[in-house]
Length: 327
Image (tube, rainbow, N blue to C red; front, side, top):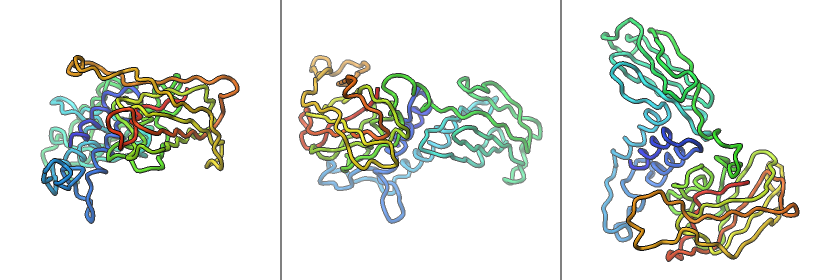
């Protein structure tokens, strides 16, 4: 439920990246239970391990939160008395979503959001057994960030096609964003909800965290041969003891890996200070930037980050990686 609201907020507020999809995963995957994939209230249902909490099951509030991500997150719907308001966006991991039968002041709409355009179709009221739909045009209001922002009139049977906002395409030409929203996979299990995608989704508030403090590899497909002049990391609150960067060629899958850089020294740039802990402010997290010389820089489609150890008090889990940037 909570992470679903984060997904809706990220779809609306994130200027770049694809954290909305990370939160969508977090709102669903750790809570699903077989055989019917119903939601539990807790990630861990064992009362002897979760603080003696008997989780609600089936957790209908969790279902409801998850289902609001398409309706209020990706369509950008917000209730307005005088208009049917939409501000559609979509992360690159989804090809499209369709929400059928959305209602506004007696009118009924289907909204199809894909990676390029969003189609808003006003249905005939008889198709939904409704008799109170005014036959006159209804105002469709498109959010101010859209290239077709403003008010549009839509009659029964008509469709309006507008661009779909794509935050993941914002800032990809800036330093540190060459890996943004690319496909990322880990070779070890991760702590529930701490998905590999979180390391490249453009947000410092989501993290990838391996379930083990032993060597753990995050592999990113940059899709095309990419010049790698350096790397940047936001380790959040739990930096690793060491990290290694490898590259793996330009084919569909790397046959071999070449080590580009290794470091056994990770600086604590954002230390925990007791007197500062309760102050409400934006916290950057621990960061590392490493530029490469001409002999070290590379051109590659595949990059692999290997982290080991955890400098925090939690020595059993792996370190946190909030952002992994290719410079």
